[in-house]
Image 1: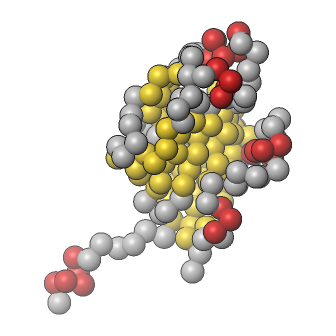
Image 2 (image 1 turned 180 degrees about the vertical axis):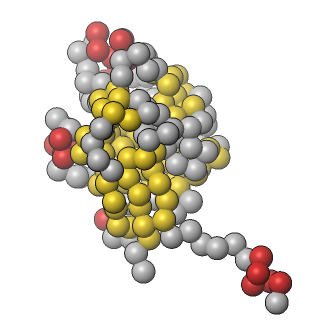
Length: 168
């Protein structure tokens, strides 16, 4: 009797929060076809407030990827989404300059935990875009439906970008 009472309920829905403060937009508006044509998956993006230099976890989950060039990281959420946070456009060419990892692969993170420090001034000086796409890279599995939030100013770790629901 108590076994059923205390079983963990599988989550069916989760909120994905802004990993950085700034202005949100749909991924289709990112000026890079890899994102705008959803080759990487569904998502949103943020044009960051240039004063912001810390990227935080957008969901509770586990860090599953840190690019060797530090320009991107991936988190597997409790719902099973694989969320990629890509910092800037063409920033892989910076070979890690301007980025500092604050976590390692395998770390468990909670919404709002600092994951990376970024020097957006340096990125801009190098002629690279500072937009931050947030995409669900396992969208093609068709396991999730999304409810996108209105496009607006967002605050890191506090503003919901979208809600994902597990399909039946």
